[in-house]
Image (cartoon, rainbow over the protein chains, first blue to last red):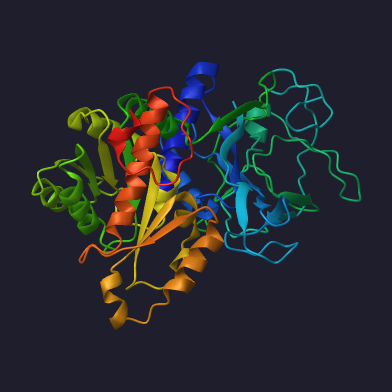
Length: 113
Length: 351
């Protein structure tokens, strides 16, 4: 459950931004999560409520947008969309794909008071 | 216009004296929840009656058209038709709380919240530590390898053999990660190598901050080797850069050949795969070629070696792989342009 430590990092990040930018309550946390990344959004939500308790993030809504996966196909010599690791190239059907997008884990935006 | 309820009346005093409309919310509240979770906490809680000292309507037309722009803190689509109640928090447990949440969003003069664009990598803190570890190791010319695998693949046995075979040539220090106990560090120390045990407690992976502490304690020698044995877990350690030069994934032939497909992230993150326990191949149904093909399907750049910590099969190739990388590191360290020259066995020759 590495989502727990990632969520702790997220909340710590927001708290330090709150101190810097002068907000004391967060309503919405917008995250970008890559489809091929290391994070399960549902696990992160589960951790979020627990970790947020007692912080300025408590009660905030976690809005997750999924960044689609892409990979460089060594045979087609171009970037193609992929839904999961180990999937075939949608163009040529071969498996020589190097993931080059969709591994994101990024805080994008906050709605704050 | 009132910035919170959008009722079209100027928001003025805290008592809402200019809001002079009867309170008639009659609209249904249809949340189209596409997802499973239902813990929305509406921020559109205007405490009517009390805060405003008056009643309050939203000028609904007879058709139910409804144009209030509350600061909704939820982003699901939300069709108002008839009869919904404000001031309500639907809790995940099914209870409904009419009094919870931030009160009086409808306080005139109070901004309905602002949006702050903050683009930050959530891994940034770990990655800062990882970068510092990497800089420190590269300044020393020390090669750090992060060994990852499921529990029981034979990581510690591989390390013990490698240390025994290489310790006369190289300074080797080891970071051992486990949830509990110092058993692995003790096994390593029995070889004469320095080892620090990190117990992660409830943690399922090592992070770069833990490794930074371990480096303080181990004080690796220049041009040496640092083995980091991660927590036995084929999932979580994949996402955490520790500052290593390479992740080395260990898989054993007593596991399934489809493991690279089932746990792809670890095989995608690694540069080398050691397929261990080859001495057991005669006794198990394990298709080495299929396993390697699966691993390459996940990561076409992965290098693979078949080894046995027990018999030493494949060890020479593994050590050549290590020494080629040490030599490259030494070249980079000397500021020379490292030629991509096959298996440059012999770290000393790079000077």
